[in-house]
Length: 254
Ligand code: PEP
Image (cartoon, rainbow, N blue to C red; front, side, top):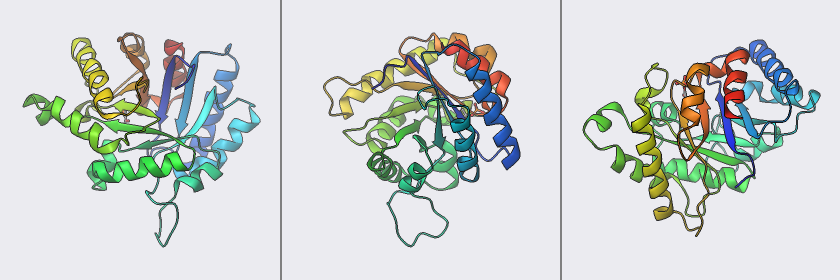
């Protein structure tokens, strides 16, 4: 779906206060501006309250969205209405947002988001012109009981529309924020599995959905992870909150 070879997406979660987020965006933007153009699509996903401020930073640094784009961490499944406290995909697009993370395990867990809700959000995001980044991944017990493949199949079928145009992030729940990661062998196997599952669900003859990995990625492990065959990039939580480590991951993806 794009000419970039890898994606590096930073998920800031609810971690940085306003000023810290703006400074982080400045540091990432100036770090990227000092490098030659890389074949990497970098996306940073601050909290809602930082979106406008971070967008202003990116515009000042004159970085094209192709180099450094703005993403959000969620959106509401319908375009407008009496939904107190919610934010629609179009409202995000109005702020210069290009990507939106959907179905993150923290939202599935803390906000009871089902696959059906995630799929509604995918439709809303796509209608507003955003690129959905849909997260799937098994829990530790599901993995240990040998049910990861069926969980992934169910999440892919339930969360993605048949005409899905976006990114898929494989984020084993047990690897998020834990410092633990799948072995290379396991990751190779899971990426192959997802590559086989996608064409069974998507309508397109030629499925070119980039598959990202997320879960405890650090600058030290970025290179070996990004060399896993078929991997289209990484979704990074904690290590995206430090400009230095995030820039090292971006360089590893180049
Ligand atoms: C995430 O929550 O999407 C994530 C990948 O977090 P971390 O890198 O901190 O495990």
